[in-house]
Structure formats: C-alpha cells, structure tokens
Image (tube, rainbow, N blue to C red; front, top):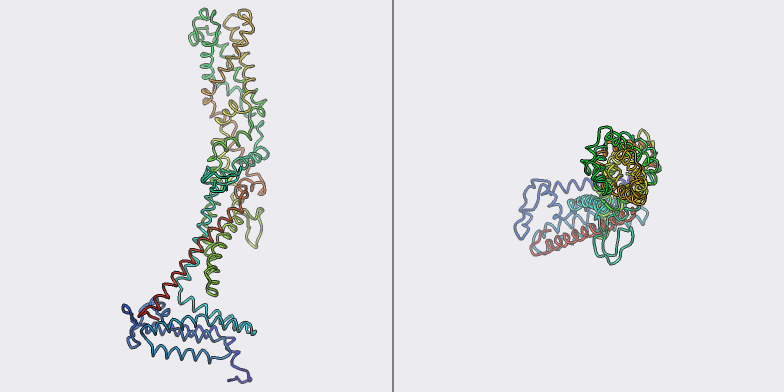
Length: 579
C-alpha cells in the first residue's frame, strides 16, 4: 500500500478528508449529469448515444436520482482504508451503464445497484466504528446521508413542514379544547363531575371546571382586590335618593292607590295619583322629604349590612356557572396574546424539531420514526409554549436581557382587560342589585325594607290625617298587615326604577379602576393565578392530546412516504422503466 514520506499509510488521509473528497466527487457527478441527462420518451430510456445537455437544476436533480451514483459512491467510500474498493465499484458501474443503457434488464440492474450503494456506506460506517475508526465512520455516514438527501431532497424537505403543521394543528386543537364545547358533546354513558373527559365525549376544560375556576378567581378578588364594605361606602345616600326620587314617587302613588283602607279612601281627595297631587303644597313637601329620607336611610342600611346582602363569591361564581361564556370570555380576553402565541408558535417549534426529525430520517429510514417524531413534536410544542407563557415567574437577568413569562410581562395590560371584563356584567350595578333583591341576602334586604316602609307609611299617615296615628283609625294588626303588603309591593316595583341610579352607582363604586389598580399592584407570583389555573387544571391532558394528534399525523406521513416509495420502485422495475 502506498505510504507518505514518514512511512505511514495514506489511509490516515482518508480518515481526515473523506468529507472533502465526497463533496468534490458529488460536484463532479452533478456536473456530469447536468451536462448529459438522458432524453426520456414514453415507455423507455434511449441509448447512451442519445444525450443532450440538461437545462435546469430540477432536471439535474431528477437525472441524478435516475443515474447510477458510482462517482458519489467512490466519495462515500473515502472513509475506508483505501480507495480500491470504491474504484472497483465505480468502474463496474461505468461498464454496466455503458453496456446496459436501456430495457428491463438495465432498469432492474440499476435499481439493485442504487439500493445497494445507498445502504453500503452505512454498513461500512458501522464496521469502521466497531474497529475504532470513529471519525471515518462519522464522515462516511454523513456522506451517505448527503447522497440520500440529494436523491429525494423534496421528500426530506417535507418533514420539517409536516412537523410545523403538526405543531400548529396540535396547539390549535389544544387551545380549542380548553374552551369548547361549552356543554358536553358525545354520549353520556359515563361522565365525571368537573371533568372534561367522559367515556365517549368531551367538554371544554373551562366550562367543565367553571365552578372551581370561578371560586379561585373570587378568592383572589375578595382577598387581594376588593374590600366590599369600603367600596359600598363610596355611595352617597342623599345623591342616591335624589336620583331615584321620580321612581319612588311612582311607587308611592301606586302603593297609596292599592293600600289605603277602603272606608277612608273617599275622604282623601280621591285615590292614588289624584290624592297625592291634590294635597296642599306644604303636605307635598313633607311627603317628598319622607320619601327622600326613606331612600337615604335604606341606602345607609345597605352600606351597614353589605356583607349580609352582597356575597361576592355567590355573585361571581353563580354568574359564571349559570353563564359559562362569561368565564370563557374573561380568560380569552385576558390571555388573547398568550393563546395566539400558543397556537402560532407550534409551527415554528414544529419546524425546528422537524429538522432534527429529518436528520434522523437521513441516517435511519424507518417509518415508525416519523410517527414517533410526530408524537414528540405534538408533545414538545405544547410543553415549550406553556413554559414560555408562564415561566420564569420573576424577571431573570440573562446577560443583557431580562427574561420573564409572556403573561407576566403583560401585567399592566391584562389588569385593564380583567377589570373591564369583570365589571361589564358580573360586577355591574345591575348585577349587584339583582343579587341583592333575589340572592341569598334578599330576606335581609326585605327585613330592612319593611322597617323603612313602616316609618314611611306612619309618617305619610300623619301628614294625610293631620297628625293622627294609624292605630287610632285602624286595627294594629290590620295596619301591620298593610305595612307588610306595602313592603312586598315596593320589592316588586323597585327593580323597575333602579335603572335611574345604575349609572351613578357604577361611577361611584368605580370597581373597574379599583380592580385594575389593585391587579397591577400584585406580585408576579400572585398575578400568575389570574390565568394559569386555566392551563394547570388539565395541562397534562393538553400535552398528551398534542402527542396523540402528532402521532396520528406522523403515522399518516409515514404511510404516504411508503406509498411514494412503492410507486417509485414500481416505475423503476416496470417494463421499459428508467434507472
């Protein structure tokens, strides 16, 4: 064997520069194919003498796939101990190509040669690795991988694209499964309380766990964001009484018409509206003052007993459980950018992981690797995106950069969205009064209302009858019944007049600003609890769903690749097929 001036075999040169040799020979082969590409006619490959220049790179690549790659084979064998074996292959291949340039025999022979030459470098690489020549084995395997990529480059390039689509699709499905369907979809053979997955069917994670999630939000609101007594203390009783005065007048006229003792009604200048409006001016002023005091005192009673009348937990949790779309809308508005990132990042992360999957496929072409790779892509894209959204919780310095979870960096913006979403319906004046009149505190409010109604009726009777006490012209039991009836009637009529004060109450309570400012004042760890529970509840479920979807798509890709190979093999081995 030839040696250099130091007496060493030239084999060590092959160990150091096989990649360069392979690259040079690859360029030579491509150049040769570009110069002389076989002219194809329907059904047969024409003899070698009918050659013409190739005119484009795609033609060159297609011809490179068809032509016997003996020159490149020599480059792939550069990592072996000598060049003799590759040279023999190259010579044999050249002779075979010259002698058998068309016909079924040529197609079969060239197909066998091509398959053998694609596999042989990897076998040789394993032998070199086992014998201790790891660098030569690596370069030989890389050379063979390059050859594989050049023969079917467009198929290999689809692997990262498919992986990107898998990442996007799995993340999109995962986000949709967080919120939809709102009600259980499927067969209710077996379902579990507050669990989205049944035996046959699915319900969105948020609507399925609406009670638990709303309870967590309420705990955050009542412990960190709102002092209910302080908030209701912002109401001005006199301002409230002034605004609702026209409504109270209408209520009073109705109650007077319905509740005055029948024997005395003819003596009160008529009934109802006519009776009140026909009173002297002094009496009307006294009655107006009584009505004003009635509303102002009732407002003070509400402020003093607000914890008995307003149960924020019941107000928020009950509202979200009854109307699950409120909770869905809250989370979607607060996490709009994070949810969009979770979906769109799937394509980028999927493509990056797909490049690794493509490299594995170059060295080890087993269909199951595509399916497993798809599962890994579906799993990792969900996992990576969730980590980037919520971690790190506290800002971290990494060189010149400050790193923090996406959601936590948007605390200022999210606080405003959260406050708007909560006060539009759940914590609006209309919702609060609906809760007071018909919620758990309705009995307490009716008790307060009855006491104030008794004082109002007694005062009104004194004005109407010249200071006469009601019990002087009516039985005490009967009058007490009238007070109860009047209080119940006011409870029925009051909701119709409350729109007169909703605007003032909303502006006076100013819950939107209070929630927003207090949210912005939370620590990052406390603020994380606003949105993270949505994902924490079934984070593992979302990731596993992504992995399963990725597995299915990867399996479909493997089936498609296998069919393409069968078509290619059938075309090469058929009558008149080209090599």
